[in-house]
Length: 267
Ligand SMILES: Cc1cc2nc3c(=O)[nH]c(=O)nc-3n(C[C@H](O)[C@H](O)[C@H](O)COP(=O)(O)OP(=O)(O)OC[C@H]3O[C@@H](n4cnc5c(N)ncnc54)[C@H](O)[C@@H]3O)c2cc1C
Image 1 (cartoon, rainbow, N blue to C red):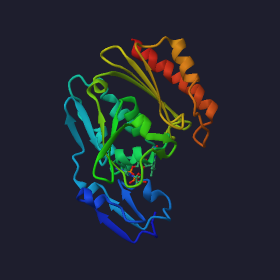
Image 2: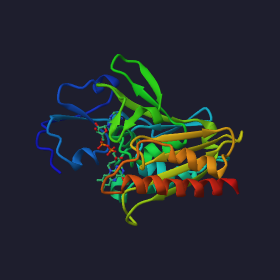
Image 3: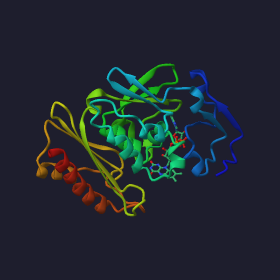
C-alpha cells in the first residue's frame, strides 16, 4: 500500500547513516511496513543498501545478516555434518507467504516484527541463535533470540537499536532436528510450530512458537520421556487466541506435535 505520510527515503551505506531522525523508520524488505498504514512514519532508512554479506561462516557457526532474505536462507547449501540443514527450508515454508514475499522479506525484519508466527523466530529459537544488536552509542550487544522476542509483536530492542545479524552456533547446526507445523487452513498462518533438536552430546531442546505469545524453549540433558515432555508442554504459559486458532486448540496441538517430534528424534 502507499505510505502517504512518508516524504523521504535514505539508502543507508554506513553505520552513521543508521541514526534515525524523528519520524524515520528502518526498512528491511518492507513486506510488513508496506502492508498497513504507518501514520507516524515520515521517512524510511533502507538497510538493504548496507551491503552486508547475507551468509557468513563465523568459526564453525553461521552468521545470517539481518538483511538476508528468507529466499536466500532457504536456498543455503548443506555443509557436511549440518544435521539441522532441513530446518532452513522448513521454517521458510512456515511463513504464510508466496515467493514474492520470500524474495524480499528479510530474516531480520521477521525477527524484529516478532509476530508469534514469525517463522524466522521459530528457526532462531530452535537453533540457539544469538541476535547481534548495534546500539546507538556505536557498540553492540548480544541477546538470545528467545529473549529478544518478548511478546506477540514486541521485542527488547530499544530506540535507535539495529539488528545487525543472527548467529547460529556450530553445536546447533550439527544437531539432529525434527519439525512440525499446523495451521487451521492448508496454506494458513501457523497455529503452532514445534521443533526438536538433539545435539551431539545427547542434550535435547524443544521449542514451541506460533502457539504461544513468545517463544518457549524446553531444555533436557537427554531426550525426555513422552510423559515428561507432555507435562512440560501443558505447563507452558502464553497460549493465545486469534483468527488463526484458539488458545485451547493451540495448547492441545502443540502437545500432539511435540510427541511426534520426540518420536522422530528417538528413532
Ligand atoms: C502475504 C504476507 C504473508 C505474511 N505472512 C507472515 C507470516 O506467516 N509470519 C510472519 O511473521 N510474518 C508474515 N508476514 C509479515 C512480514 O512479511 C514478515 O514478518 C517479514 O519477514 C518481515 O520482513 P521485512 O524485511 O519485510 O520487514 P519490514 O517490513 O521491512 O520491517 C518490519 C519491522 O521491523 C523493523 N526492522 C526491519 N529490519 C530491522 C533491523 N535489522 N533492525 C531493527 N528493526 C528492523 C522495521 O522498522 C519494521 O518495524 C506476511 C506478510 C505478507 C505480505
